[in-house]
Image (cartoon, rainbow, N blue to C red; front, side, top):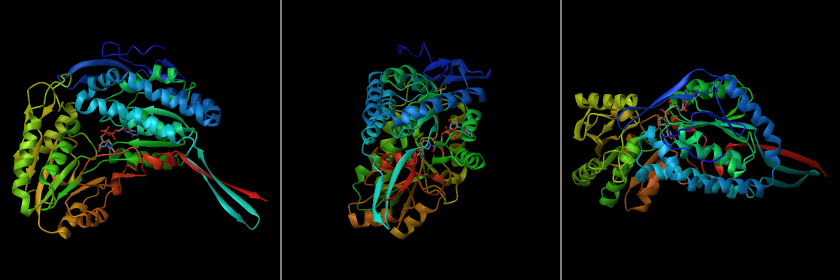
Length: 486
Ligand code: NAD
């Protein structure tokens, strides 16, 4: 099967058992380009119950042989798949951009290559993800093995279509599971286009499948009795539904990567320019549609005025780069669609009417497409919705603080707990604050970043379980204890 997908030849069918097949579901998906709201396609397949069952049957058939495949053979397939993604990254990024609107240079390339890197990273673990053996005791030798679960699935959001898919698919496949990818209904094309690369890399039929679909497809997966694990990234509300469906069906394992409202805390002794650069980049990457974006910025009194001036200037510079996501010079593209645009502008308008003082931004850019200025409110009250809720757009709140104690209380006063950042040149203070943040990840003199080698995820309502690193492999395996009577 040759890879020949492009914006004029979009993949629209389900990829089951190493073939493109039409959905048995008569409902179709309709999508628009966020740069001008023009129709992209209205005939994209949505997987229904019969399609989900067909993919599961194929995966169940493939599982015994895939599980037993030698580490080297599985690793070679995964390395080849990574190389194929890299070979086709420009086309794949375009297939995401056409409905996401993320410019290639500032986000599309990164998130596409993240998928390739995730495959390479996890392939390297295959022959190193060892179990345990215990000293002989009372005549028994005990061995603990990491065993794959069987048929697993990944349900992913739209803001990083291939990156989030790779973080789930790669550890699932590396540990010997079969994997069904359900991309977001807003960004299905890059995932559906993986078909020829899956075949060329050498994945046997049924091992790695892609089912485009919406929340109904997602709920068919999360409530299915024959799926053993769902790894989900998306909103808190959907995450809770998935956990409930898992509990009510077969108690499938669940990993949840959910929302955030990450604080960045800048102390008087911080490197001011470094703090401004990180926080401004964190707010504008992917037009603020990033779960760990630093959207609550707290600056100590002594440098507050200088920070305000520098942060505003940096964001005004970013605003100059707003434009057509297909143009090379564009850094900030549009928000993904009208629904997201209405949501974000709703928060901004309500923010303007009394929740804080508008420092910069606050308006739409152009009159077609869903472009929005980076927007900052200062002096925001603790209970205002722009400080308590995830907006998922380039909107932040900027407040001053006096003491370390006060800022820890404010930073942790939220149901979210994904990421936090602390900026200071005092390493003792940095480590003290880092250990007190109620969040899954902390940056010191940096914020809003991830690494493939270390656990990624949140505490409190920001998630359950971890992706990346060894944690991701654990999340796709169960431990089996073997007791040998010597
Ligand atoms: P969403 O929850 O609306 O949808 C995510 C996925 O879940 C989609 O594929 C959707 O089709 C599917 N889905 C919807 N209803 C379902 C149901 N009842 N059962 C099963 N699946 C269902 O989220 P979104 O709008 O696509 O993404 C934005 C959210 O994702 C934000 O809250 C953001 O913070 C979060 N996010 C988190 C991370 C992270 O790693 N923590 C990363 C990116 C995005």
